Length: 132
Image 1 (cartoon, rainbow, N blue to C red):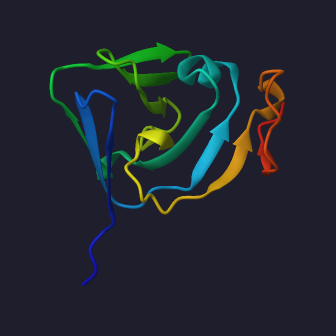
Image 2 (image 1 turned 120 degrees about the vertical axis):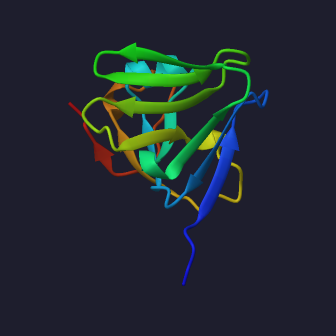
């Protein structure tokens, strides 16, 4: 009997940690304005089933900020961008890939909303989705 893969991660200060007991989706880079504002560059995110994710908020620092059909989760103490979830996909939670402890075994496979990338950024050669 094989066991599910387990991944862990958390914020910079350690106040918020998480455990994923299941598969992580490969990484998607999102260049939309909201993701750029949330991360300060672009969102590199993996995803998991909500049922597979356990979030430990050791000092009540996880804050969810709603923005038109989505919510962005970050640590109120250190400011780390951690999660994203969409009202349209309640069974999934997107996880900022940089917060996952290596080795992740993940690959970047897709770019979303690349037409919204900032003028300083040359996008990588990835398949595009949601280009407007």
